[in-house]
Length: 142
Image (tube, rainbow, N blue to C red):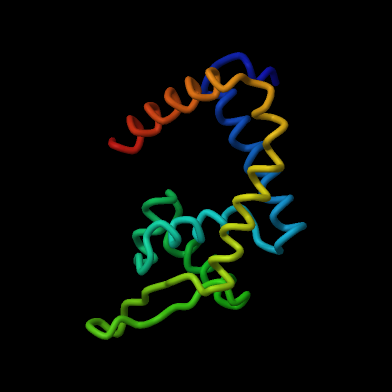
């Protein structure tokens, strides 16, 4: 299949390949996957967020997020606490180890993909980022 036939296919293919490569390098170096990193990043941005909100933000099911969170808890990267006001509700936070992994994972992914992004100029990078950000806002606001 020629992925350059249309913009949608090209964007999908690039996202898929970059995600797969990120997953592979993270598994090899840290023992976590890209999906788990995305959960860690959400928790880094918004500590004490509910699992339901994580699922909504990442466009995944609550069941999928719950499975990933249990795995991250077993690895000592997250902790889950019951809310005192509502004992049925769990709040998940990063551990110190989780914070360290978040920073290390970001550096690993950035350095792995640096050669790819070095093929475009800073101006092209900024333009691409602006266009993709605008499309992202458009699709996420609807």
